Image (cartoon, rainbow, N blue to C red; front, top):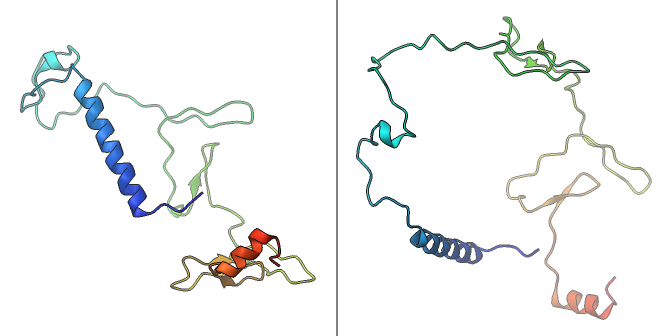
Length: 162
């Protein structure tokens, strides 16, 4: 896949805008204007508010259930989650409905590969500023790919590149 340039993106955006304009022009059910206040109940799926609702009103006819925990054989159900206890700010809510602190959160740095030994997975070294185009080598160092020269490309085409 080739790199996208800003020229490619501009071309795509302009083409997309033209297509949207073309499709919008074909629609016939678009109102020419809308009321400034959003309309009335007639324009909201036929629902009617039968009494004024005072500012700050509290609706008390809505109830919520607590979540149901998952088990090995049954899925849990959505709902209000249990409150974590004091001191559990680093915990997460498990599927069984309990709060737990993550375990095994200590990680080691990666071990680099050598000519005689495989490397080991782990945290990778941070790249330095200006190395955003670099890649991490198996020996644990950051490197940048050099642009191929014309001679190298000719050698690849000729099958003589080494």
